[in-house]
Length: 634
Image (cartoon, rainbow, N blue to C red; front, side, top):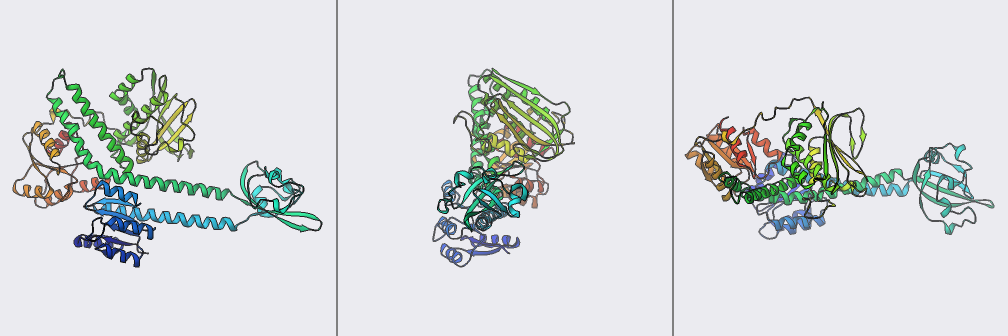
């Protein structure tokens, strides 16, 4: 069945374009250019999704979203606006709208968002239908029958034998309380009166093999001459209990998905702007430090400012990783090498300084296989695990970091089910008090923390580890008790060889330019100033423009050796579109793309145009120098 979408927007050209795109993908599309027309459409037809502009000529778009959410509960509502604000994003979350996008929006992202929102609504509807169906079956289905007198079993049916796993000879003549402990508390053997019998009972039955099963029981009296005979209808509740557990898990997953969508809306809205701001805090101190001697009075203070900026940028990156499920570039590497590098890092030395009474021991397997991994993300996971272990221990204790080569011939049920395969395993074990049983299922949730607020990070450390392991197709096992905890990360091994350390390393002294002209295209003035200052210092000749349109005009008049393009610029065309237009009249134009946030779709589009160098803001001087040098010399 064709899925239908209502586009509510007063921009005629935009609506026409969106309609063509969606109809090409097989959707049925209706257009409403005013709030009145939108309400009329919603009154006449149900829709699978609504693309909703917030600013309409006659009404606030949020009111339409609120109406649709209450009258068409199965409709996915996606805000698509050119006037995005934090206030409107908060309203969208408050009225339980499904997603929030800003114009201009990439076609791939729009289609992906629509598909995901419709699928989420479908799953929610299936959950409700499944629950209703389950309740109907639970009320109508009875499986086992026991006829008894004075609580002694007289007769049973085949279904009852299957519930208890016994033969008729084994079960007949037994006392029911021996089969169902707790029975005699509710059903006395003597003077049993129908008025005193509970309508239903939920107890546990003991099977012939000793296992217990949950059962539901209903009892009725039968006439049998002078002797009072009763019948008990018994139903095995195992399936229902499992279904209830699955339903609770689905509900929890849905709640988590909604929470992550809310975080994603807010994170995506602020990440680009915040990383532009952080560029000043990270890069200007680096420029100042280049001109200062090691004995300069304020050198340490400036270094602290730079470090604070880097930490803030790392928090934004963590939030985006958690909210958007960011993927990363991977290459063959070895966990042993990463651990040896970590043991020489500033993070490790600071940890030893702050926790002098905690012993840290490395036990590395000599023949550890390589893995396909992002060294940055794996190193960050190591740092988070070791830091958490130290904080769990407190004053005195021991942390053991191990690697191991494991070949699982069958599935292993740990914290999660680990399928058969060959794995390189990273293990971090501490001698702390362990993780509470009640907290264990929730430790990877965003912001779930037992630590003191403001003293131990953002609450995203374990969540980032979870996302990193998932992005590497790996698995996690946790063993925790009163004597400590052990985290084990399973990464699929590979046969590819690692590159030699330093094979592609650069010294800043080798990255200076020779006066080449570079056009910096960015909608943020301070970003243009920062980048120009760095490029001048590196020996290049920078020029700046504020929009993609201005960049196209500039290159038509005055060709340059390299373009340094911001990916997202508002208003106007994006960095990707700017470069695409320039290539039409300047084939072979070299370029580097920069942005506060890259998703995998952006990276694929960039590569398709021939760009191999891209920078994530805030970037360092060395990072910029290396990207520009490699692109110009390409």
